[in-house]
Image (tube, rainbow, N blue to C red):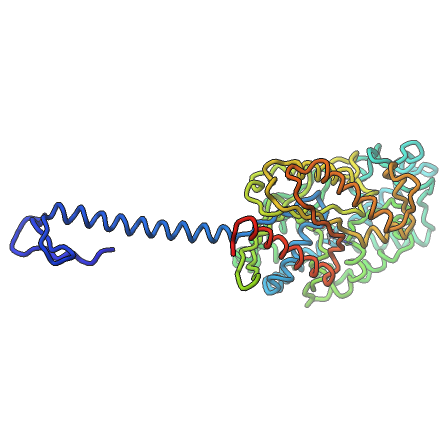
Length: 488
Ligand SMILES: Nc1nc2c(ncn2[C@@H]2O[C@H](COP(=O)(O)OP(=O)(O)OP(=O)(O)O)[C@@H](O)[C@H]2O)c(=O)[nH]1
Ligand SMILES: [Mg+2]
């Protein structure tokens, strides 16, 4: 703003007749105001120019990375790995908020076990579940059905292939007695499932439909930005507190159920399909049920919580002395969520696409006819060929290699689910190469801008290995961004 204008003395009118200009010469008032307003206008223009230059610079230092892939591919887990590396303090602060979510993961597993046992016991003698018997004539292939969790399984009974045989679930009288006692004792804990799920979802959205999986929509944000209303005295603490107490008093029963021969048998027969992280939490129930339990990094990484919509996470990344504003967009990967990705495409600096290659024997919860590997390949095709993304760098992570190894070791045959695998050896190296070749083929044929593809095999729960990959991927993306934008 200009300094106070000296007004010529001795005139009573509100508009002065002449005014001392910059040179000390008296100027007619009109001319003075013209020059003054010009000067102010120039100053404002200059300020605006500087401001927009600053904003341009800030935007150029913004690196927007989208994590894409089907549900349960590991996007949120990768986001947490970035957070561990670049913003570990913020993850540390969040640890108390993960406690009820870890508890929820255990309660959900207990509920699934009890429901499956009930279901199997309700089947008439001499008749198997009616689910697995389909196998004989519904040999699993890329287009056969077979969702990943037991609760969903019952929604789609008629289409369920699985590796089960003619096996009939008939526990002994002793086993039945134990199961019945455990069931009765665990009912109060399981009764908290829905209310805890609904409270943790922040009342935003809780899918009770096909999947029955708990979903989240920025629940941590809700808890952190408004600690008084929810984390402090809100109902999350109320229900979460009840769940913590119930868990504390049920830990031995949970251990007994988890160790029960019937549960082992149903898992072996692939009738009981728990969430992938359930064994980790059930093995650790004694530690997790302690009243002063605080989730550690492994717990946070293992948690299963479905993402709703698109959630932005931002960390500063220092590369070569320059700070970059690294923004990760973690999206919901289920089919019904994918439309929400599109508005973010045009601005994206890079895409990290996650495909869980352990999922060759699994099917989409939202469409039990679609094999998960098929879905990943289709989705990757649409991402490679999307014109809005033609400038975005492309990173592909073939994830869950640890689970793939475990499945192959357990004798699960790829060819049974993916017929084109043929008679290749059912060994990790062969299977991994086979899937990599398919994804690379998609990229080669469909990529809209012939860009390079950076491919990594990942096991996202392995902190050390993933941190190395993260640093490489992060720096490569920023360097490409620098090259593209001419930033120095
Ligand atoms: N064993 C194993 N588990 C993994 C790996 N990556 C992720 N998980 C687990 O897989 C489950 C799903 O991972 P998420 O990161 O929630 O999946 P997402 O892609 O964000 O799923 P949506 O939010 O539904 O789209 C979690 O329980 C993770 O702990 C991996 O490499 N190995
Ligand atoms: Mg997620």
